Amino acid sequence: MLSCSTRRLLTAFSSHLRHQVTPISTFSFSLLHAPYSTSSKLRGAQTQYTFPHLISSFNHMLRMNPPPSVFQFNKLLSALVRMNHLHTVLSFSKQMESVGIRPDVCNASILINCFCRLHRVDFGFYVLGKMCKIGLKPDIITFNTLINGLCIQGNLIEAVNCFDKIVAIGYQPDVKTYSAIVNSLSKMGKFNVAFGLLEEMTRRGCQPNVVTYNSIIDSLCKYGQVDEAFQVFSKIKIEGILHSVVTYTSLIHGLCYSGQWGKASTLFNDMLDQNIAPDRVTFSMLVDELCKEGMVDKARCVVGTMIQRGIEPDVITYNSLIDGFGLDRQMHQARKVFNVMTNKDCNPNVCTYNILIHWYCKWKMIDEAEQLLDEMLRKGLSPDNYTYNALIRGFCYTRSPGVAMKLFKDLCAGGYRPNIVSYSALLHGFCELKDFDVVFSLLYEMQMRKLKPDICICNILIHGMCKAGRLKDAKKIFSMLFVGGLQPVVQTYNIMITGLCKEGLLDEAHDLFRKMKGNGCSPDRVSYNVIIHGFLWHKNLCKGIELIHEMREYGFSADNTTFALVVDLLCKKDIILENL
Image (tube, rainbow, N blue to C red):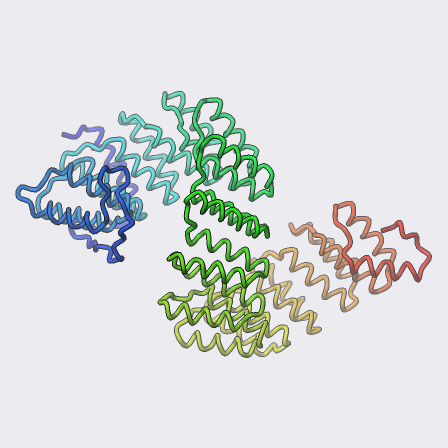
């Protein structure tokens, strides 16, 4: 029988059920109809089972009279959970219930775990209530699953409330309970609270493990606090907790992201010295970071090392390498990697095609991009907004905005739902043509689709107006930004200052330049060079030199145009070149 305290707990938990919960007996679950994978194995078992084998075993067990114990069913369900066949587990649980197999705590916890991983924690709490109704007392594993589910959904307050309530009724949280909340706090950047919880955890006699610390190290690195992450790394080493591949991978990622490639290389070698073998995630992360930094040849070497160690690259690794070659304008090499994927039965996905189409369009190889689109469709892959936006952009730059508009209209007629990015490409194209009738019709169409222009589109419009000599219209759009709740960015100011300088309105341009910082947008190198260009073009050398001094004080340097203008004017006037 359940204690009164447990019944009170259930009452308290009712606050978590914010949505109307459909009773499990009437909730419809269907089997996944994905192709059976012969590579899906039950890890850790003496015999390796495929998904079809488990399906067959379940059906056989269900027909036995009497059926096996729920313990045997739990082993099979746990194997399916590890294979991520969650809907199958839910369907099997319903069938077990229909033939009268009574669940135990483990069985109910498996069910709760499935719901939590499917982001339906409310159903998990329903199962908890059903457990208690039939006299099953939940254990700490049950509550850990629910707390972790709440954390995954971002409901940290509810997770903490749940934690407090189970402590109040006598449950002893274990390392998994604490780790779930520490992980959630760390992802939110609440590191002081996370460290405080670690101290409380230790005081209660529950020692953090490497998983607990890994969550903090990973989040510190993602927040750019790599030095603090290394302090935690050193602390756990002193405490005798062995680092894992996850620890090293997080730190290497943080170092790569902050441009500390030397330290990342040293740490990678240290990882090998500690006999901690890099996994596919570590290698893929290194490849991705190297490619983003334009070091695609080094990334290719990492892939070679990966293969030598017996780790086959997956689609994520290959996508990063293709992206790196595209960034480096080596489209022939990018296509070779694509072909290698296909030959190795590593099927390119929509993301793979999108990367290639994007770079083909970027480097004005629109025919190749169109061929890839046709290939996608033949293979049954559905292009998404990213695919079509890349093509619309490519058509604007390589053929004409008119051809891009025709593609756009054809796509819309076929059910394509354009987004802000789609309209940005078209607006930029027609602004360059100074065809403002089409520009205004596109803006009206956006309004009809309830798409509100963002700062990027406003920048395109302001730039187009300034370039076409319609400064009044540009100023009107700029002033409307504040009314519409959009905050101008540095590019917005730079465009507007350039337009004012072009029309000779230097005082107005300088006044706007000075207002930037007060509006929460500090001038950058481009801002200084733009305003300096304005004064130099209009032969105001003194003001230009004054701003050059100021620019240098802020650590910015003159660009080639600024330098050439000053030299030209100095050749005509008796001014000392040292002023530069």
